[in-house]
Image (cartoon, rainbow, N blue to C red; front, side, top):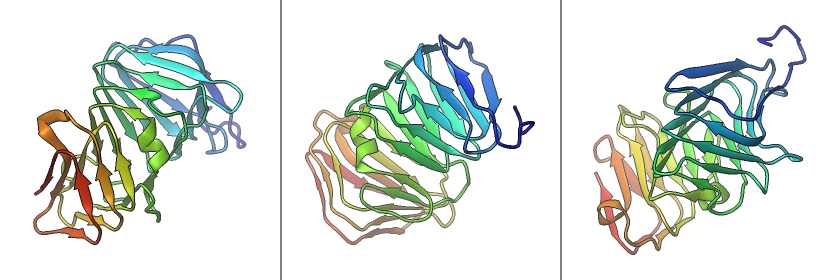
Length: 231
């Protein structure tokens, strides 16, 4: 659509997408329209980029079952990445899943998103990230979103992240959490209790915060069944 219809025109992807390592870019017009993935959709390894509008994995009336045979990147340039539906699942197996958007809403059921590693990162460099019960202007990743993840490792931000990552109260029961805020001006702030009951995590670490040098602020307790590393 690319804005040809001023009100936006929904783009629906169903019945599989074969990317074979390439990138598919969609432009669905305004944020109120966007791109929707529904039904049983197999995505070969690659990257799906939504240049305009939201990306909805499933809708209120139609769930999506998304699988991938390789590492998968879902990027939303100017809208929200939404996984809203009770029956929706994303399973990339032993591969990695990167979710990249400035806003996200993930309310699918517990353990509905499966990967070896799930990375959350904003599109805009330096954008603030809020975890658990923390809220603010930026990328908010709620407790419900964390509960939806079934992966040995969850990564927040990319190495070199220059923004502030603030955690409110947050519980982790099956994943190692790596937080990156190690770019110039990057900072990690613990404003609520973080509790990790996960065992057998990669490297024996439950939580690792990589900052830009004496920049992690701990205003609340961290409790972990495995190691906590602050760099």
